[in-house]
Length: 415
Image (cartoon, rainbow, N blue to C red; front, side):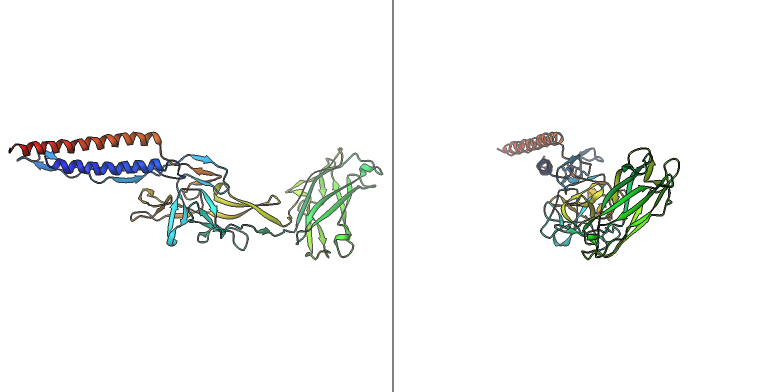
């Protein structure tokens, strides 16, 4: 009978632990990336009573329950945070915790600290790759802190290629206004200064399906007068450009900028692959689009995390540039991780070696930008567990009071 005291007490202790787990789960109902825990009970070895071979077996109660974290997928919730990110699938973000310890998290609410480093909401440094001196992000190098180029200015890119998608009027009458057509395109020099390049097309007076062109810059942009680049465009009877041939861009050399910019040569591309960009049909001469690959200097306006874990910097001229990449780790047995607080986990004694790489590779999950992963705590399940553990506690407390009463009755037998 007296074994019942220790048996019931072991149940009270185990149930208290279970209630603590439920309470912790409910407390983290809204914690980003939180993974709910469950408890697993196991009985203690039994003792055999009686002369026979175990006819009567009485257990010694329940052992301390084992707590297990359930790394199931949480729902993905879209947010307005540019630096929010959610993991869809297996894997963890890698962070540098206190004392330079490596930790792992599913929480994706990030921010930029005073040093320009990307951190978690609680200040741990997020790990990945940052844009190198070459301007590219090399994911083959070791991971490190991700530094955001806050307040930086993107240097200008001088124009190297231009193109005009246009039609020249095949029905133009020589000597009339429609026999001449002009259009302009803006380019940039090495200092980011804009210049206007003007192309003038004139229908050839003697040769059908032929237009003469002249490309020029304002003389005021140069230290000496610009010599126009001239030539002829020839079309076939179907209005398709045949000369110059595909693969032969027209070169426009520009020397002696008045602002001191470096000399440059523009390649005027007349084809998209082998498809002519300039046609000659019986429609009014017009430009449908123009393109050039230069940029003026631009101010950084915002930084955000895109799908796939790329960190994109957006500049005042609308350009976007990849300035970083989040790293992701997969662990074969994540249930062996040890919670270290702040929604982070550390490697335990039985944890497999993490495999680190780019999201959506090698079995790793993907990263969804502008979103967070919700907690996996299910309130209905936790309330059910709460009632079950409460009833279990009350039942075992009743066992103790009953055994206590029986003990008093036994003592009273001597009186």
